Every structure is written in structure tokens, then in C-alpha cells.
Image 1: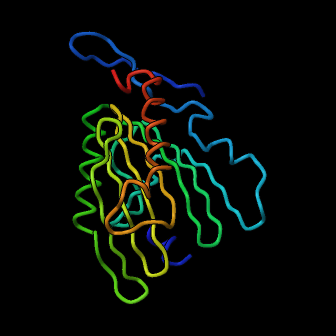
Image 2 (image 1 turned 60 degrees about the vertical axis):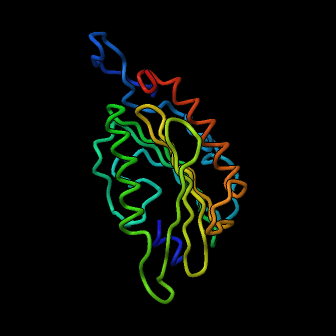
Length: 202
């Protein structure tokens, strides 16, 4: 994510046990589940690049340490990205085998923000600011500040799933909620939608 900015089907289920009762846990995302997924097959201008991937190795879109691959034991993942000149937008949903694993993923994001929140020099310098946000079970709004651009991100956990929404531009270091409202709205919509998947919210 940092490099991009600087350089610019149905759900399957498995049985698990909780409190002595069998429950279903989603291990795949239904086709069309993402809010922006349909845009991939829609009209686009020559300079617009849209991509959809189900790779479970793609890191979370909030990735301050610029990790090249995900190693968080996820069950499923889908990421939509839109790139056009200096504009970058993305939507990502990741399913984990348990709520505990999803909580660990959120802890890792916080740890990475603390560890890699500032760095670089000259045109490669960057910094991140973040605050808790009242969405889902837990959430963060994150501002990324780069040499020639900024990003706004919201990452939310709902049960055993994590969703991420990213847009370039509009971030200020005080992270006012007003600047994040479109992303918060999408995060709230997805947090509710995730509970329609078997086993995610239990």
C-alpha cells in the first residue's frame, strides 16, 4: 500500500464446537459479497484499473510495515482495488476461523502502526495516525501521510471477520470523524452484512 502511494460460490461451512453445540463457520465468500464488487465488470475509462482477488496471501490493506504476504491463518479473503493516476481505493473482507484469530489480526494492525508508524526520508517519508472508531465490535480510523498524498482508512472487526476500506486524500492529522464518514458508512454496512454469513457473529 505504501509503495503504491509513494510511487504512483456460495459460502462453504465447517462444523466447530462452542459451548458444546455445533455451529457453522464460513470458509468462503459468496460471489458479489463486497459492496464494490460489481464495479469490476462495469464500464471504466482507459486510465482506470480495477481488480478483484481472492488471494488469502494478500496483506491487510492497512499495512504500515509494508508486509508482502499475509500469514494470519485466514479462512478466506477478497480484495477490490481501484487505481487511477494518484487515486487509490480499496475494499477488503477477510474471514478467520475464529473470533480469537480475528482479534489477533486487529492486535497485529495496532502493533504494526506503533512499530512502523513513521519512517523514510525525503520523498519516501511517511507517517500514520490512528484512533478507535465506534463501528462493529472494534474498529480504527487511520490516516496515512505521504510525500505527495494522504490516505483515509477504516478497519473494522465483526465477530470472526475483518473489513477494510481505503481512500486517498482528505486526511488531516487530527483525524476528524467528518473526513471518514463515507468509509465509516461502508464499514457499518459491511459489519451488519457479515453477520449474515454462517458462524461469523455467533
